[in-house]
Image 1: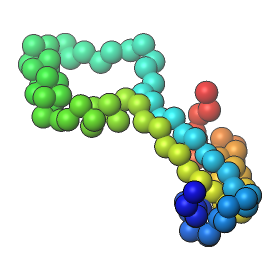
Image 2 (image 1 turned 90 degrees about the vertical axis):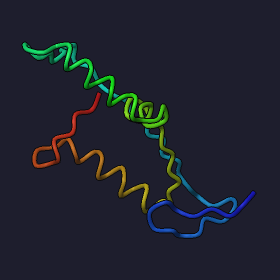
Image 3 (image 1 turned 90 degrees about the horizontal axis):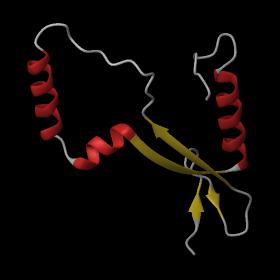
Length: 98
């Protein structure tokens, strides 16, 4: 097994050391509302199809769903958890947790 390092601070994490894995799933949320223009619906569909055709399947998939894995040392893990928990508090960045 290779040596590892913290994603954020790059601290060396030798085998057997304390380390944390953060697994993040980012996926599109749908609130049940579709915005459909009142005029030129066919033109809007054509525009969307052209946009889709100009992108790769991987690009389109990442826009809908992506997983990210981070390896953190204890200090960066503590900072990460504190930042995420504080995000929903008054004065935070307004994140909504599901």
